[in-house]
Length: 276
Image (cartoon, rainbow, N blue to C red):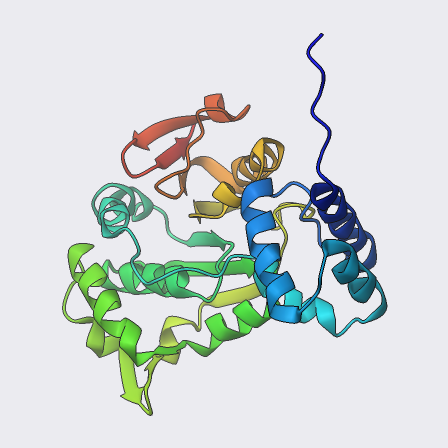
């Protein structure tokens, strides 16, 4: 039998750190993709000046003030409005006409980060005449990210990329009609968020909380291992109504999921699926 390679001391320490975080704070990162998580936590070691994961673990266990500072390294907060414009264009052209047949709609933006994708969907739904019949649920495990999402405030230098993405997504009119620029920031119209419920929700430990017509969870599963990906997809399946829609990120798919037979591919290139 081929001998099993022993984990490195650093990986053992990392494992114990994640166990400590789970038992102390009930945030479970044990199923996150190892290489990516380790890379981000090595950055945290440099940031906070610890020599090892064991040193960080000792501090995490005895200083509650550290964990909130560590959370941004554990969760990835990278997004932009209308990211991958062809995805949103496909939603407009393929999914929206089907959603328009329902008298009321619920949309779950899972792992919403700082709200860019939520705002993109709110604008898209307004432009396509569905906003007034839609309730949005925006969830994330990072409360600071949820607060930023609720503020609707973004750095002004990000607006050109947002504007280009919006145009490429088939946006109607100019993105500028949705925000006011002042003091180096763009403040998006509050009315875009008035139909949104923000909530702390973990795809790792929490259960389904609502029945929805569309789940958009993009570029989150890539940070999970296979078992955790399967759990999250199972949550989406259980949350969706029959014939509901699931949108994933460009590098994500259902191919290896135990739930893949519950879905059909509506748009393979844009990773849009429909529950059977």
